[in-house]
Image 1 (cartoon, rainbow, N blue to C red):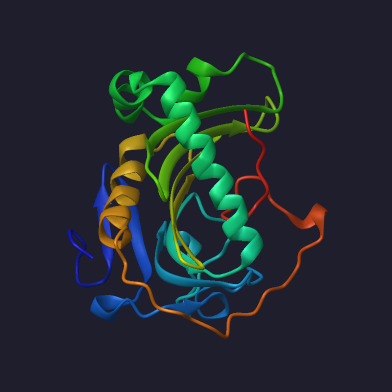
Image 2 (cartoon, rainbow, N blue to C red):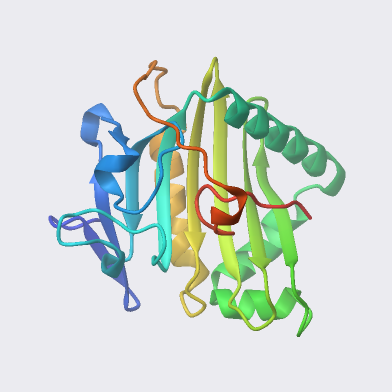
Length: 233
């Protein structure tokens, strides 16, 4: 990836991204089992992924449970995930038509100048549990991107997720980044996520097969992880 050293790392303001899987020029996809040691597969194929170095083991596999920030580009052909993504695109189109681009032009730039903690404290009432803010960043005919900030419990840190998705035929392309570190400047998440979006948004269609899907029990989902079930504001 651009702007990364030979060891696949980039460090800014004391925060370091480690790219622990990169499919290279051929965009070779990896199965979940090959790059995570504690994540059940859900029919996805990972094209590129980066996280904080502490979340990656000596064997080069990452943890889905202990990361502070994580970004991923992936594709899937699972019908229910495509249906959910289409609903998200539809919502983004509707919200963009109703709300305009005030958030993108006025609010989002100011959020990138500060840490996640500053953002969360500015939008969530003190002491309130189960709060979410969701805003559209872009919406097109077959693609959309949006931002979510969530806090489950008042005494827990908030989380931020950036998502881009595009549907082509029976394939869902998704680029998602999640930030859990309250002190990390938001722009460091946004810039890495945007670099993945720019790289993969026009990924040529290719049918893939062979990925396993393991159904998790509802109580096993971790709100805010890359595959957790999230509510809508």
